[in-house]
Figure 1 (spheres, rainbow, N blue to C red):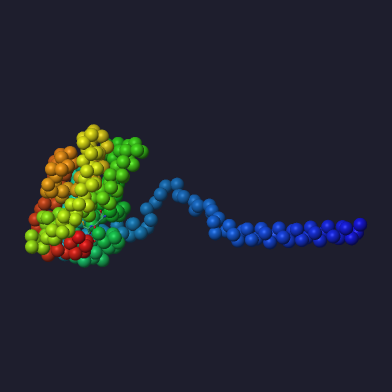
Figure 2 (cartoon, rainbow, N blue to C red):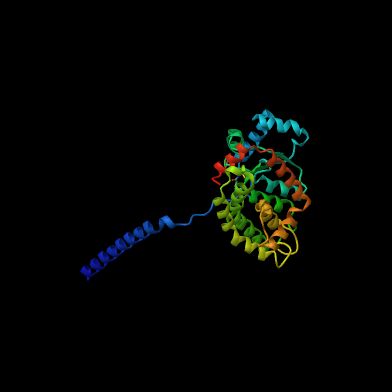
Length: 305
Ligand SMILES: N[C@@H](CCC(=O)N[C@@H](CS)C(=O)NCC(=O)O)C(=O)O
């Protein structure tokens, strides 16, 4: 009997030992996938300190007036210096998109028409506000943002929810759909076409690049043509941020032969005829006409167009 009890005791110890080994093995196995509780979220979101620092740097640029081009800009428009919204980028660039949206919304903003590259957006002063180094970017009362269509979507949602910016979840998603579509399907093609058909000096235009660009945009243009054949605007009967984004991205296509896509042509002309679009286009045309050939060459080189 005593032998039996000794035997069952050692059996129990053995089982406990095996159990402990198995448990520790399983813990080793699952630990990397363990889900830990998230850090508590503050009741009200606060801008991280870096953004405040950036705004301070952006203010410092204004006060110092550096680089020289910027001090000239500031001298020309002293009354606007206190605007909460600053739009950076000469209107010839994708800054045109942000300028159009700001005009649609009737915003009080300050436009800082800085150039691309080392002479502007990639100068240390501007990289401090926008490390992405490309145009456009905005500083909205300390909130820094780059990517042209993120800027237009942000401004429309902030100032025109339910009008220029759709109120319903599905329409909002369709506005994103068209915006991402424009950036990924047609932005580069239209840009290459415009450089090699219009903007570069005639002797430097590359016909092969121009024709290839037309081939690339042909299919997406048919998609857009069909979308605006069945209704006046991309989301229905009203002009929204979806129209502004797509029309702004392909605005230079107004100079193409669009006879194969008549609905697109009529829709684009209608969007670009809006008073706010005309205002932004006037800035863009002026900047285009003042752009020396050397800068146009640099645009083609930097952006590999
Ligand atoms: N996807 C970006 C593209 C920005 C972009 O490429 N901007 C051009 C001017 S239109 C630029 O800054 N190029 C000069 C460079 O990359 O240094 C946007 O839509 O904002």
